[in-house]
Amino acid sequence: MPECLRHLYAELDETLTVWGEVEVASLRHCIAYRQLVNVASVIFRPKHEGILVYLRLDPDAIELEKGFTRDMRGTGHIGTGDLEVRIVSAADLEKAAPLIRRPFEAA
Image (cartoon, rainbow, N blue to C red; front, side, top):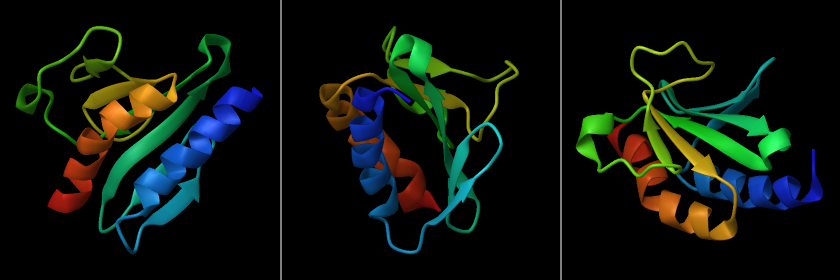
């Protein structure tokens, strides 16, 4: 994994685990974050120097932003959730924090 993703993932992991009792499971293709149910999955895309976060969040509940968020309903993908958030920088992570918080608050 590129060094830039390593640091970005460390910050993302901190954001995902701040919600108390969060179980983290390293699976074959992703890292799952769960409380009572899976609420987020993380997949690394080193070729694109980015991290994809899939959230258990209704894409209709937010305004999608091209290149940052994507509706994954009806598409086959690895991970939990219908909303994909693409994180390639600390600024993206900061912008994604409110979205990341929502499924944890609902769980």
